Amino acid sequence: MSDEGRETPATSGRRLLNATAIMASGTMVSRILGFGRAMLLAFALGNGARQAEMFGLATLIPNTLYMLFAGGALNTVLVPQIVRAIKNDSDGGQTYINRIITAFLAALAVITALMALAVPWLLTLWTDPRWQTLPHWESLVFITYLTMPQLFFYGAFFLVGQVLNAKDSFGPMMWAPIANNLVQIGVLGLYVVIWGQGVDTSAPFTTDQALLLGGGSTVGIVVQTLILIPFYRRTGFHYRPRWDLKGTGLGHTFHLAKWMMGYVALTLIAQVVVTRLATSAVVGGSGAGSTAYNQAYLVWVLPHSLLTVSLATAMLPQASRLAAVKDLIGVADEVRRAIRLAVTFLVPATIGMIVLAEPITRVGFGLGQGAGDYHFVAWTLMAFAIGLVPYTIQYLYLRGFYALEDTRTPFLLQVVISGANTALAIALVLAWHDVNTVAPRLALAYSLAYLLGVWLSHLSLRKRLVTLGGGDLVRHLAKLVGATAPGALLAWAITWYFTRFESALLTLVGLGLAAIVAMLAFFFVAKRIGISEATQVLHALRRRPEPPSVVSAPSDEVAEEIGPVPSEGAAASGEGDDPEPAGEPEA
Image (cartoon, rainbow, N blue to C red; front, side, top):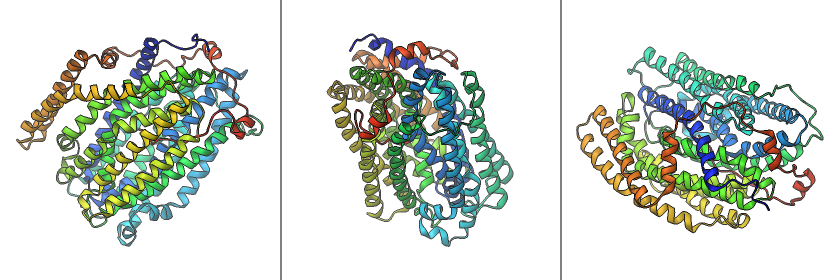
């Protein structure tokens, strides 16, 4: 195979970082606003109270399904297929994309309607049975009815965003959630203004409270989706429903997606088990339940969302192009470079979360109603941090499988991960009764499951990409730990000093100072011991990213690199690529 279609390491690294900088800038703003929303939620409802738990549960089902789709169930199937349609079809993929959108929107509409009808039954699955005996049950069902339409709009947002990504227009999908977060902040701010801090967070919601929180939450998702439409039109695509689906090649797409549906089912089972266990902590009035779990997850997933998701989104189209022309060495290089860049940022983030969990959660979730229970979030964050690097590497390994159109191997891997997570969660939570540590134990189960998953994923992908290696990554991780340790010790000392004053403002000052010192120390040591990726990341952060172009996808460039779409018959018979499952959401 000629190297003409393959980029040099330097070119590939620059391309990944440039695309990542654009996406990460949007994600950074969105996540900051999302963090502001979470802070307001803790301020208004607390981190371990029944009202916080009810609102979290009401948004959990549609949000979880969206994360399953976006984290692997659809993008891993659609991106390679859309890229090939853009290259191979005489109309640039217009007809194929219209059929894809029509088929999936119709499916989403049916699923959303069925889920809305099944809300009471779904909640009995997702909650500890004792919730049904509380006067809070009717309130919980009502607010969930209000949030269920989010499922359709999450899916529509994702579908349109994937078309933009296939055209190498990554910015809009990353920036659109900003509008949603602004709406959510406005809703929670209005809630605080109307009802203040004197509300009893252990009581059921009133009808007005449920309407504001549930309805406002759904409006935010609708706005987020509608914002993508002008960008979609600027790509040159114009959506018109197409119902002539038979014999159009969609069979291959749905053949790949069937494994993703298996993935969805597996992950839902794990989610149901974990959520039922988490809600058991709060049914008695207060405890470290799903709210503490989700707040900690929000902080934990931030570095992953800022860098890894952006890297993966930028990497997948190029890796798919290389896979289409059977350049497996090029695919391995893409995966390896993305992983090295990601862990260069995430190893320091992991150690930082463990060392600084207490001040981070004190500042973020320890005001208002959250002043008495923010430590639930701190302990959970520490447990989650153990799994950040394994989760990230697993996430990128799966993108390697997706580029190869292998949707079966990830499914089998997810069987193991979901099974391990479920078994460990049950074992750790039932081992002893302490409602204040349920969420940390669930987070630890999650981390341990991904430690197992990343090891199995590496072994599986290396069979397909024999040049993937592994020893160099272990050495890279060891160097990163060494480069991070001095700054982590300094950061701990600084925050220990400032937190003695029992002031949220001084804790924030200490946290900011600790972060600056730790970052400077890391880059200083990393440069001295030759971690080149740290310098690349620093340069990317220093560069001002160009405004995201709506269309940057040279069709002739794509035409040189992409081969024909595999036949439906070959795929069905198992020739060529193996099939797969997915990793979890993102954020």
